[in-house]
Amino acid sequence: MPASEHIIQLLPADGIGVFGPPRSNQSSRQTRKVITAWPNQARAPKLLDKVRLAIRARQYSKRTEESYVHWIKRFIFFHNKRHPAEMGEPEINAYLSHLALKEHVSSSTQNQSLAALLFLYRYVLGRELGELGDVIRARRPKRLPVVQTREEVKAVLSQLHGDKWLMAALIYGAGLRLMECLRLRVQDVDFARNEILVRDGKGGKDRVTMLPKSLKKPLEEHLRKVKAVHEKDLAEGWGRVPLPDALDRKYPNASREWRWQWVFPQEHRWKNGKTGEQGRHHVDESILQKAFKQAVEKAGLTKRATCHTLRHSFATHLIEAGYDIRTVQELLGHKDVRTTMIYTHVLNQGGRGVKSPVDDL
Image 1 (cartoon, rainbow, N blue to C red):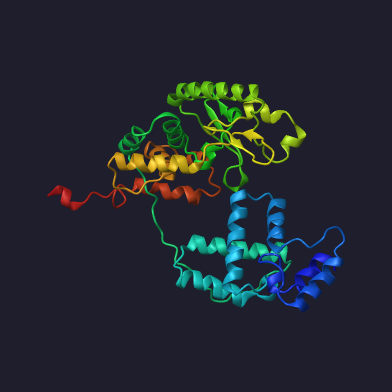
Image 2: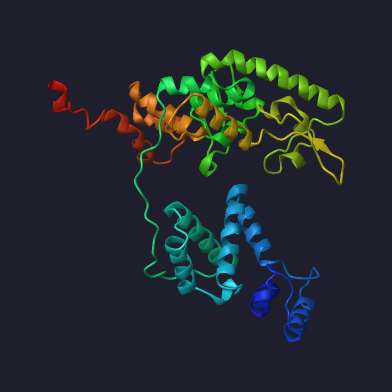
Protein backbone atom coordinates (compact mmCIF):
# COMPACT_ATOMS: atom_id res chain seq x y z
CA MET A 1 0.00 0.00 0.00
CA PRO A 2 1.50 3.39 -0.89
CA ALA A 3 2.43 5.84 1.85
CA SER A 4 -0.36 8.22 0.84
CA GLU A 5 -3.02 5.57 1.61
CA HIS A 6 -1.46 4.87 5.00
CA ILE A 7 -1.74 8.53 5.88
CA ILE A 8 -5.39 8.77 4.86
CA GLN A 9 -6.18 5.88 7.18
CA LEU A 10 -4.05 6.87 10.14
CA LEU A 11 -4.40 10.60 10.40
CA PRO A 12 -7.25 11.75 12.68
CA ALA A 13 -10.00 14.07 11.47
CA ASP A 14 -8.18 17.21 12.53
CA GLY A 15 -5.00 16.06 10.83
CA ILE A 16 -6.25 15.28 7.34
CA GLY A 17 -4.62 18.43 6.09
CA VAL A 18 -7.85 20.37 5.71
CA PHE A 19 -8.21 21.96 9.09
CA GLY A 20 -4.75 21.94 10.70
CA PRO A 21 -2.50 19.70 12.82
CA PRO A 22 -3.75 17.07 15.26
CA ARG A 23 -4.46 18.22 18.78
CA SER A 24 -3.59 15.27 21.00
CA ASN A 25 -0.01 14.18 21.75
CA GLN A 26 -0.85 10.62 20.79
CA SER A 27 -2.17 11.74 17.43
CA SER A 28 0.90 13.92 16.90
CA ARG A 29 3.25 11.00 17.57
CA GLN A 30 1.26 8.82 15.21
CA THR A 31 1.36 11.51 12.54
CA ARG A 32 5.12 11.97 12.86
CA LYS A 33 5.66 8.26 12.57
CA VAL A 34 3.70 8.05 9.34
CA ILE A 35 5.24 11.17 7.82
CA THR A 36 8.77 9.87 8.32
CA ALA A 37 7.79 7.00 6.06
CA TRP A 38 6.78 9.41 3.29
CA PRO A 39 9.51 9.10 0.64
CA ASN A 40 9.89 12.41 -1.12
CA GLN A 41 8.50 15.20 1.01
CA ALA A 42 8.17 16.42 4.56
CA ARG A 43 4.47 15.59 4.84
CA ALA A 44 1.73 13.95 2.86
CA PRO A 45 -0.43 15.96 0.46
CA LYS A 46 -3.49 17.42 2.09
CA LEU A 47 -6.87 15.98 1.23
CA LEU A 48 -8.06 19.05 -0.64
CA ASP A 49 -4.74 19.24 -2.48
CA LYS A 50 -5.39 15.70 -3.68
CA VAL A 51 -8.85 16.75 -4.82
CA ARG A 52 -7.39 19.65 -6.79
CA LEU A 53 -4.72 17.45 -8.37
CA ALA A 54 -7.30 14.84 -9.37
CA ILE A 55 -9.50 17.53 -10.93
CA ARG A 56 -6.64 19.12 -12.85
CA ALA A 57 -5.41 15.72 -14.07
CA ARG A 58 -8.82 15.26 -15.69
CA GLN A 59 -8.71 18.79 -17.13
CA TYR A 60 -11.87 20.02 -15.46
CA SER A 61 -12.44 23.74 -15.54
CA LYS A 62 -11.17 26.08 -12.83
CA ARG A 63 -14.73 26.86 -11.80
CA THR A 64 -15.54 23.18 -11.40
CA GLU A 65 -12.46 22.83 -9.19
CA GLU A 66 -13.51 25.71 -6.97
CA SER A 67 -17.06 24.41 -6.75
CA TYR A 68 -16.08 20.83 -5.89
CA VAL A 69 -13.62 21.93 -3.21
CA HIS A 70 -16.31 24.19 -1.72
CA TRP A 71 -18.90 21.41 -1.47
CA ILE A 72 -16.42 18.89 -0.07
CA LYS A 73 -15.45 21.36 2.65
CA ARG A 74 -19.08 21.92 3.55
CA PHE A 75 -19.69 18.18 3.71
CA ILE A 76 -16.79 17.72 6.15
CA PHE A 77 -17.85 20.63 8.34
CA PHE A 78 -21.45 19.41 8.36
CA HIS A 79 -20.22 16.19 9.95
CA ASN A 80 -18.03 17.95 12.52
CA LYS A 81 -14.76 17.58 10.60
CA ARG A 82 -14.89 13.82 10.27
CA HIS A 83 -12.62 12.41 7.59
CA PRO A 84 -14.61 11.42 4.48
CA ALA A 85 -12.90 8.01 4.52
CA GLU A 86 -14.73 7.29 7.79
CA MET A 87 -18.09 8.15 6.27
CA GLY A 88 -20.23 6.76 3.50
CA GLU A 89 -23.71 6.55 2.07
CA PRO A 90 -25.68 7.41 5.26
CA GLU A 91 -23.66 10.58 5.87
CA ILE A 92 -23.97 11.68 2.25
CA ASN A 93 -27.70 11.00 2.38
CA ALA A 94 -28.08 13.07 5.55
CA TYR A 95 -26.07 15.93 4.06
CA LEU A 96 -28.02 16.07 0.79
CA SER A 97 -31.32 15.89 2.65
CA HIS A 98 -30.17 18.76 4.88
CA LEU A 99 -29.44 20.88 1.80
CA ALA A 100 -32.93 20.27 0.46
CA LEU A 101 -34.93 20.54 3.69
CA LYS A 102 -33.03 23.07 5.79
CA GLU A 103 -31.18 25.21 3.29
CA HIS A 104 -33.79 24.98 0.52
CA VAL A 105 -31.19 24.80 -2.23
CA SER A 106 -32.22 24.29 -5.84
CA SER A 107 -32.08 20.84 -7.38
CA SER A 108 -29.13 21.85 -9.57
CA THR A 109 -27.19 23.00 -6.50
CA GLN A 110 -27.92 19.75 -4.69
CA ASN A 111 -26.86 17.73 -7.73
CA GLN A 112 -23.65 19.71 -7.98
CA SER A 113 -22.88 18.90 -4.35
CA LEU A 114 -23.53 15.21 -4.98
CA ALA A 115 -21.25 15.28 -8.05
CA ALA A 116 -18.44 16.73 -5.92
CA LEU A 117 -18.81 13.99 -3.31
CA LEU A 118 -18.95 11.24 -5.93
CA PHE A 119 -15.75 12.62 -7.41
CA LEU A 120 -14.09 12.66 -3.98
CA TYR A 121 -14.90 9.06 -3.19
CA ARG A 122 -14.26 7.65 -6.65
CA TYR A 123 -11.08 9.42 -7.72
CA VAL A 124 -9.44 10.56 -4.48
CA LEU A 125 -10.39 7.93 -1.90
CA GLY A 126 -10.63 5.15 -4.48
CA ARG A 127 -14.01 3.92 -3.31
CA GLU A 128 -17.23 3.40 -5.23
CA LEU A 129 -20.38 4.37 -3.37
CA GLY A 130 -23.32 2.02 -3.20
CA GLU A 131 -26.98 2.89 -2.97
CA LEU A 132 -27.61 6.27 -1.38
CA GLY A 133 -31.08 5.23 -0.33
CA ASP A 134 -33.99 7.62 -0.33
CA VAL A 135 -32.15 10.89 -0.69
CA ILE A 136 -34.56 13.78 -0.28
CA ARG A 137 -34.12 15.67 -3.51
CA ALA A 138 -34.74 19.34 -4.03
CA ARG A 139 -37.59 19.64 -6.48
CA ARG A 140 -36.53 20.70 -9.94
CA PRO A 141 -39.17 23.05 -11.30
CA LYS A 142 -39.82 23.08 -15.01
CA ARG A 143 -39.35 26.71 -15.88
CA LEU A 144 -39.21 28.44 -19.21
CA PRO A 145 -36.23 30.74 -19.81
CA VAL A 146 -36.77 34.46 -19.51
CA VAL A 147 -36.70 35.89 -23.02
CA GLN A 148 -36.65 39.50 -24.15
CA THR A 149 -38.42 40.67 -27.27
CA ARG A 150 -36.38 42.28 -30.01
CA GLU A 151 -37.64 45.69 -28.89
CA GLU A 152 -36.58 44.98 -25.30
CA VAL A 153 -33.12 43.84 -26.38
CA LYS A 154 -32.77 47.01 -28.44
CA ALA A 155 -33.87 49.14 -25.48
CA VAL A 156 -31.34 47.53 -23.13
CA LEU A 157 -28.47 47.74 -25.61
CA SER A 158 -29.22 51.43 -26.14
CA GLN A 159 -28.38 51.99 -22.46
CA LEU A 160 -24.90 50.47 -22.84
CA HIS A 161 -21.88 52.15 -24.37
CA GLY A 162 -18.36 51.37 -25.49
CA ASP A 163 -16.95 47.90 -24.97
CA LYS A 164 -19.86 46.99 -22.65
CA TRP A 165 -22.30 47.57 -25.52
CA LEU A 166 -20.07 45.54 -27.85
CA MET A 167 -19.81 42.62 -25.41
CA ALA A 168 -23.58 42.53 -24.82
CA ALA A 169 -24.28 42.83 -28.55
CA LEU A 170 -21.92 39.91 -29.27
CA ILE A 171 -23.57 37.75 -26.63
CA TYR A 172 -26.96 38.38 -28.21
CA GLY A 173 -25.80 38.40 -31.81
CA ALA A 174 -23.75 35.19 -31.62
CA GLY A 175 -25.52 33.31 -28.82
CA LEU A 176 -22.45 33.32 -26.57
CA ARG A 177 -22.30 32.55 -22.90
CA LEU A 178 -20.90 35.38 -20.79
CA MET A 179 -17.50 33.77 -20.17
CA GLU A 180 -17.25 32.59 -23.77
CA CYS A 181 -17.47 36.21 -24.83
CA LEU A 182 -14.95 37.47 -22.29
CA ARG A 183 -12.44 34.71 -23.10
CA LEU A 184 -12.38 35.39 -26.82
CA ARG A 185 -8.90 35.87 -28.24
CA VAL A 186 -8.03 37.85 -31.34
CA GLN A 187 -7.42 34.74 -33.45
CA ASP A 188 -10.90 33.41 -32.60
CA VAL A 189 -12.59 36.09 -34.70
CA ASP A 190 -12.60 35.42 -38.45
CA PHE A 191 -13.72 38.58 -40.22
CA ALA A 192 -13.34 37.04 -43.69
CA ARG A 193 -15.71 34.14 -42.96
CA ASN A 194 -17.96 36.06 -40.55
CA GLU A 195 -17.31 33.43 -37.88
CA ILE A 196 -16.40 33.25 -34.23
CA LEU A 197 -14.61 30.18 -32.89
CA VAL A 198 -15.62 29.42 -29.33
CA ARG A 199 -12.80 27.43 -27.73
CA ASP A 200 -13.24 25.13 -24.77
CA GLY A 201 -16.90 25.95 -24.25
CA LYS A 202 -19.15 24.20 -21.77
CA GLY A 203 -18.23 20.53 -21.63
CA GLY A 204 -14.79 21.26 -23.10
CA LYS A 205 -16.22 21.55 -26.63
CA ASP A 206 -15.21 23.92 -29.42
CA ARG A 207 -17.83 25.27 -31.80
CA VAL A 208 -18.29 27.85 -34.53
CA THR A 209 -20.98 30.51 -34.42
CA MET A 210 -21.69 33.54 -36.56
CA LEU A 211 -20.04 36.95 -36.42
CA PRO A 212 -22.92 39.41 -36.91
CA LYS A 213 -22.23 41.62 -39.93
CA SER A 214 -23.52 44.70 -38.13
CA LEU A 215 -20.83 44.21 -35.46
CA LYS A 216 -17.86 43.78 -37.79
CA LYS A 217 -16.94 47.45 -38.04
CA PRO A 218 -17.38 48.23 -34.31
CA LEU A 219 -15.34 45.13 -33.46
CA GLU A 220 -12.56 46.03 -35.91
CA GLU A 221 -12.38 49.53 -34.44
CA HIS A 222 -12.30 48.08 -30.93
CA LEU A 223 -9.45 45.72 -31.85
CA ARG A 224 -7.43 48.59 -33.31
CA LYS A 225 -7.58 50.29 -29.91
CA VAL A 226 -6.73 47.05 -28.11
CA LYS A 227 -3.75 46.50 -30.41
CA ALA A 228 -2.41 49.99 -29.67
CA VAL A 229 -2.60 49.23 -25.94
CA HIS A 230 -0.87 45.88 -26.50
CA GLU A 231 1.97 47.50 -28.45
CA LYS A 232 2.41 50.02 -25.65
CA ASP A 233 2.58 47.19 -23.12
CA LEU A 234 5.22 45.44 -25.24
CA ALA A 235 7.27 48.61 -25.47
CA GLU A 236 7.24 48.83 -21.69
CA GLY A 237 8.42 45.24 -21.34
CA TRP A 238 5.13 43.49 -20.68
CA GLY A 239 2.28 42.44 -22.97
CA ARG A 240 2.03 38.76 -22.03
CA VAL A 241 -1.22 36.87 -21.48
CA PRO A 242 -1.77 33.43 -19.94
CA LEU A 243 -2.04 30.63 -22.49
CA PRO A 244 -4.20 27.50 -22.25
CA ASP A 245 -2.73 24.17 -21.13
CA ALA A 246 1.07 24.06 -21.43
CA LEU A 247 1.42 26.17 -24.56
CA ASP A 248 3.45 28.81 -22.71
CA ARG A 249 6.18 26.20 -22.13
CA LYS A 250 5.98 24.81 -25.65
CA TYR A 251 5.95 28.25 -27.28
CA PRO A 252 7.64 30.66 -24.83
CA ASN A 253 7.07 33.76 -26.95
CA ALA A 254 3.49 33.02 -28.00
CA SER A 255 2.00 34.86 -25.02
CA ARG A 256 3.32 38.14 -26.47
CA GLU A 257 1.86 37.58 -29.94
CA TRP A 258 -1.09 39.68 -31.06
CA ARG A 259 -3.24 36.70 -32.05
CA TRP A 260 -3.25 35.34 -28.50
CA GLN A 261 -4.38 38.60 -26.86
CA TRP A 262 -7.81 38.96 -25.30
CA VAL A 263 -10.46 40.66 -27.40
CA PHE A 264 -11.73 42.35 -24.22
CA PRO A 265 -8.71 42.96 -21.94
CA GLN A 266 -8.71 44.66 -18.58
CA GLU A 267 -8.39 48.42 -18.52
CA HIS A 268 -5.46 48.31 -16.11
CA ARG A 269 -2.56 45.87 -15.87
CA TRP A 270 -2.40 43.57 -12.88
CA LYS A 271 0.86 43.40 -10.97
CA ASN A 272 2.40 40.49 -9.11
CA GLY A 273 3.54 41.92 -5.80
CA LYS A 274 6.30 39.32 -5.38
CA THR A 275 7.82 39.22 -8.85
CA GLY A 276 6.80 42.65 -10.13
CA GLU A 277 5.46 41.04 -13.29
CA GLN A 278 2.60 42.85 -15.01
CA GLY A 279 -0.01 41.73 -17.50
CA ARG A 280 -3.65 41.96 -18.53
CA HIS A 281 -6.38 39.45 -17.99
CA HIS A 282 -9.75 39.59 -19.73
CA VAL A 283 -12.50 41.83 -18.37
CA ASP A 284 -14.03 40.55 -15.14
CA GLU A 285 -17.54 39.23 -15.64
CA SER A 286 -18.94 41.31 -12.77
CA ILE A 287 -18.25 44.52 -14.72
CA LEU A 288 -20.60 43.57 -17.56
CA GLN A 289 -23.12 41.99 -15.20
CA LYS A 290 -23.47 45.20 -13.19
CA ALA A 291 -23.64 47.36 -16.30
CA PHE A 292 -26.30 45.11 -17.83
CA LYS A 293 -28.40 45.18 -14.67
CA GLN A 294 -28.31 48.97 -14.64
CA ALA A 295 -29.21 49.04 -18.36
CA VAL A 296 -32.27 46.85 -17.74
CA GLU A 297 -33.42 49.21 -14.98
CA LYS A 298 -32.87 52.29 -17.12
CA ALA A 299 -34.82 50.69 -19.97
CA GLY A 300 -37.76 50.33 -17.60
CA LEU A 301 -38.15 46.57 -18.06
CA THR A 302 -39.97 44.54 -15.41
CA LYS A 303 -38.53 41.19 -16.48
CA ARG A 304 -35.65 39.81 -14.46
CA ALA A 305 -32.95 39.80 -17.13
CA THR A 306 -29.26 38.94 -16.95
CA CYS A 307 -26.51 38.68 -19.53
CA HIS A 308 -27.54 35.05 -20.10
CA THR A 309 -31.02 36.26 -21.04
CA LEU A 310 -29.43 37.58 -24.24
CA ARG A 311 -28.40 34.02 -25.16
CA HIS A 312 -31.93 32.77 -24.49
CA SER A 313 -33.28 35.59 -26.64
CA PHE A 314 -30.84 34.74 -29.46
CA ALA A 315 -32.10 31.15 -29.62
CA THR A 316 -35.77 32.10 -29.33
CA HIS A 317 -35.60 34.77 -32.02
CA LEU A 318 -33.86 32.37 -34.43
CA ILE A 319 -36.63 29.80 -33.98
CA GLU A 320 -39.24 32.53 -34.42
CA ALA A 321 -37.52 33.43 -37.69
CA GLY A 322 -37.98 29.88 -38.94
CA TYR A 323 -34.48 28.39 -38.49
CA ASP A 324 -34.52 24.65 -37.79
CA ILE A 325 -33.81 23.33 -34.32
CA ARG A 326 -30.63 21.48 -35.33
CA THR A 327 -29.04 24.67 -36.63
CA VAL A 328 -29.85 26.47 -33.39
CA GLN A 329 -28.49 23.52 -31.42
CA GLU A 330 -25.13 23.72 -33.20
CA LEU A 331 -24.87 27.48 -32.76
CA LEU A 332 -25.60 27.18 -29.04
CA GLY A 333 -23.28 24.21 -28.56
CA HIS A 334 -25.91 22.00 -26.90
CA LYS A 335 -24.97 18.33 -26.65
CA ASP A 336 -28.59 17.15 -26.68
CA VAL A 337 -31.27 18.61 -28.92
CA ARG A 338 -33.73 18.23 -26.03
CA THR A 339 -31.92 21.09 -24.30
CA THR A 340 -32.55 23.28 -27.33
CA MET A 341 -36.18 22.19 -27.58
CA ILE A 342 -37.07 24.36 -24.59
CA TYR A 343 -36.91 27.38 -26.88
CA THR A 344 -39.71 26.01 -29.07
CA HIS A 345 -42.18 27.33 -26.50
CA VAL A 346 -42.37 30.42 -28.70
CA LEU A 347 -44.08 28.33 -31.37
CA ASN A 348 -47.02 27.79 -29.04
CA GLN A 349 -48.00 31.45 -29.36
CA GLY A 350 -50.31 31.01 -26.38
CA GLY A 351 -52.03 27.64 -26.17
CA ARG A 352 -50.14 25.95 -29.04
CA GLY A 353 -51.30 28.42 -31.64
CA VAL A 354 -54.96 27.96 -30.76
CA LYS A 355 -57.01 31.12 -31.15
CA SER A 356 -58.77 32.11 -27.96
CA PRO A 357 -62.58 32.25 -28.26
CA VAL A 358 -62.61 35.60 -26.50
CA ASP A 359 -60.92 37.07 -29.57
CA ASP A 360 -64.09 36.38 -31.61
CA LEU A 361 -66.43 38.21 -29.26
